[in-house]
Length: 368
View 1 (spheres, one colour):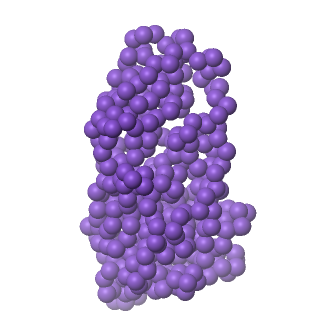
View 2 (cartoon, one colour):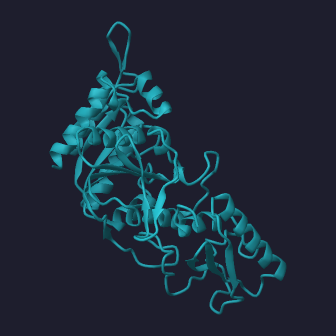
View 3 (cartoon, rainbow, N blue to C red):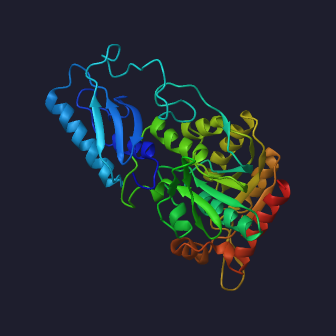
């Protein structure tokens, strides 16, 4: 079946096949049931309504098989047509019981309850969040993880930003993760000493992730609970930007979170959203380790600093909400170049590299 969990592939493929009756994807219309692997074949049940014509049923089967092949499934799709199903005459109706193996963390795709679990074998789970996109949260996450690895700790990076995965680019390794067939675990790719897992490793670079919440959380659940993070000192989870359902569902699904880091720029529009992030974590009783003020200034050739996005905004916000600024990271061309080539700047002996390394040391001191 390849080196990726077939259930994860099925979620991705089923999200791209349109149900002509409900107008939604066959995944969101809850037509895909009971996935199971048998050798190289993937067996699923396709639940149709009376309104599905024989031609529509065959088209759905063919499109689902085609999308699975495009995603790298080497075996065959063995789809069982279960016909019309009582109680599912309307697309908005949901079955009473969740389907084993297909539920996500939080509000499950088939209405299952939130299943809060610890990440097995990990000492500290650290969330890196931002109230809005574009403030460099993923760059901070990658450099923090690599910095911790450079300090000798076991470090992992989980890229939970399913719609905008960037970890494979930032760490310079787009390799697809393998799977341990015995333990039924996804094996993260190791890059710069960090175990890394991202949706960007499973889909092509030009593929748009047009997924609804349950599909997103199903993928994130597998990344958190079905991957081999055993033996890590620190697992960095790069959250999607914002404070919406995806973030709340993940926070409610992962037990034993050690703390959170919020990334912001000094700009007022970013600080306003960072405040919302602080509020979210405190309402959920999650420890806030501190803020990272990214793009704090631009250093001119003569050594003077130009506060492009505002001056000391992160420090003001930290004082306002009663936390600390863990690091101030300047706006530099070197950071952009390091991100583009997949060699985190924390590996360089430059002022910015040392600033990221100091961030890693501070986090390790807070969570020994």
